[in-house]
Length: 136
Image (tube, rainbow, N blue to C red; front, side):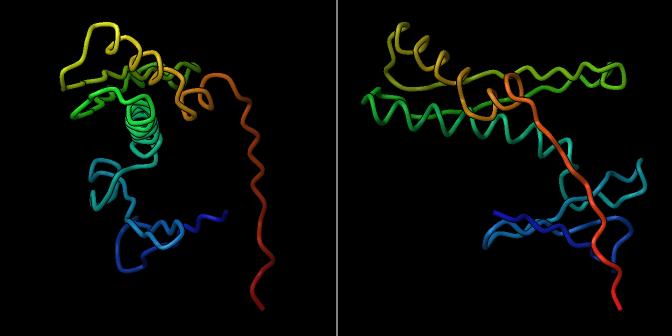
């Protein structure tokens, strides 16, 4: 799969991200020279974790017929030590429905094993950045 990020030249810093048939704006807040027209790359990174936890939890609950009614995940960022190599994310799983405490704990355990959580904490990500040939 290829994701494409294209500059919106009519704006200060905004770009449009294209993922399959979806498109959305990314930008920086005004304090960083943007216009705050969309989430920042850090916001997307953090959101990926929250979204993965929510979707994984719902998928599992449906598969196991656990009567969860609503799922909300909050993600709190502490980037105060990012430049020193530590980026902290605290997620909180909010569940509603006629759940037993054992079911709540089971869903918490599942959320902790979502693929993005594993990717962020257990995988080595290799990034290669290359320059496309100059346009003629």
